[in-house]
Image (cartoon, rainbow over all chains, first blue to last red; front, top):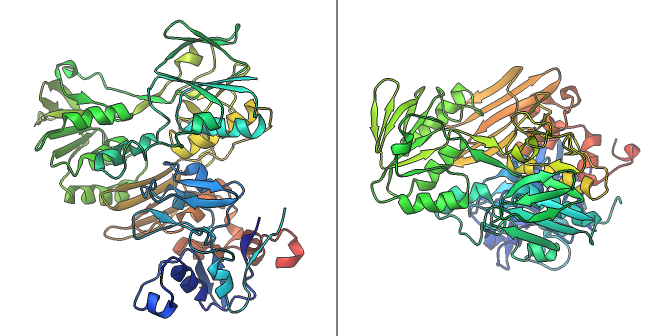
Length: 144
Length: 415
């Protein structure tokens, strides 16, 4: 299946992926208007230090420790995509404690949030991928 | 193939899901002494808080048993295994025969034999849905609730009832709260936080005698209460296997394939004792993630795969009245520490390995630390100084990042 992959040699550290991610879950048409004065809480995050930068989001692991560890059954893997049912999540953060990539985050509504490849908000390619100005984030089938 | 599972909680679900990956045909029978669809036990405190309800507490969808071709025998207790005949005897005298048997019998609350406890009319334990419902029914406005035990169960219970206008007092034999997973300093932060929310503590104290509505402590302090909750600990339910000569210690002894000492009998979850790789010793780790993964491991092996689960470590993520606490592994070796008013980070390491950690407050990306323990990552292969300050993939080598984030397997590409 297609997953989001990042190539840190191409990452500019511009953080646009974070903004596109945050924008994707709003219903607004205009990004600047939607995110003006908003402290964004994106599902993809840039790590940067000493000129190196790269984006991290859910890997949709073959052996998903977050799903196996979820105490409520709110995290499931459906057609290769790890999804969160916010209605069942009670915010215990056992998934945050379990994810080896640091790609699961608390959210403002008390449940957790994570990358779901934009399938709940958009058709097609995830917004971080289309928004990356330098092709550092790709949506491809790789590996097995 | 006839699969029989005793118990209907997390480990059972892990096993069913694993069995069905390998065997779509075999019959699966689940024997449960409760009358409910599989539910998440740790959610009982959230139920009392009103943050979930009985429907959302279901650990799997309503169609789980049908979808996975399982027969659920609910409200039945397995009383005996007859390993020669390969069958389980139920409390109603019925037999259930098996080719492969899985015991995920969980644990039961241990109620200390304190003199006078029998005189207490309003007393509860707090591990099952029925316990939570019974406790909820007993609470009235201004009830004085005494919780004996300031461990995970006791404190989650305290949180669960905290919005019900009751007065909560908590006693523990240990000198600190959450004594099995926190050190003095971190425990003090949690205790202070709970005290700010009106919970009163008597630590280093023991109830020596009960009257109907009074507990007497060792120093003669008398505590009046309306409702008593005992939460001093749980004991693994091992008797089914022990009675037929299977190897047990505190828990049922299993190997890394979740096999017991008796052929075709497996065990998983809170009833077991298994290897804690952060400490290098076998122990009972009654924790939900381990229960699922052991159940999965048992199910895989029961259905013909060769599957090993050898990465169990103690792991806790707890919210208590808005304060988040995460702990993992074993607290031995040197310590990296950052502490503040309501925050704490302690990383314990020795021999080039991370052994354990305690985090309070800032818990972001904690899973990266967990992974270092679980994978026994040699610390000289990462930027340990950096990762101590901030968990992140930046601390790993470029090559390893290419594998983690780019799906790059060919070593020549990302280097």
